Image (cartoon, rainbow, N blue to C red; front, side, top):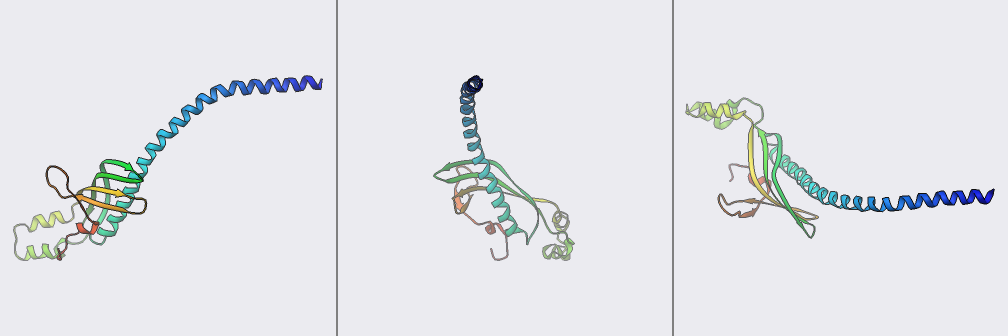
Length: 174
């Protein structure tokens, strides 16, 4: 009786092992290829997501003292990755508005009002409107740094020049 029980257990184990091995091999092959495709797609998403976060932090650090920031957006994103360096080109939009205050206390609007400048009403109305800043950016993302470039060619082939976000701030010193 003991021998019969051992034989039945062995037969049961052999049947299960043989039925699983052929279907699992096929399933494992599919799963490995799916994982490889997902990893390739994930790398691209991670680079874009990383750059979106980086750009937003740079935008906040640079512009938050001058404007109320409403958000940002990356469009037309293209990247190429070689030797752990992501070379991404994209259009970057910053949505902002001036701080909510009386436009008549802003120096250039106050001066236009006092001088009866015909553009006073335009300056006044536009001051509190939501604005959009657009810039074409090429970002080289190395493992330990990101270098930003902007396209300085108004027409034709791109000419990329290195820049910092604070280069975009217009001040009296420029």
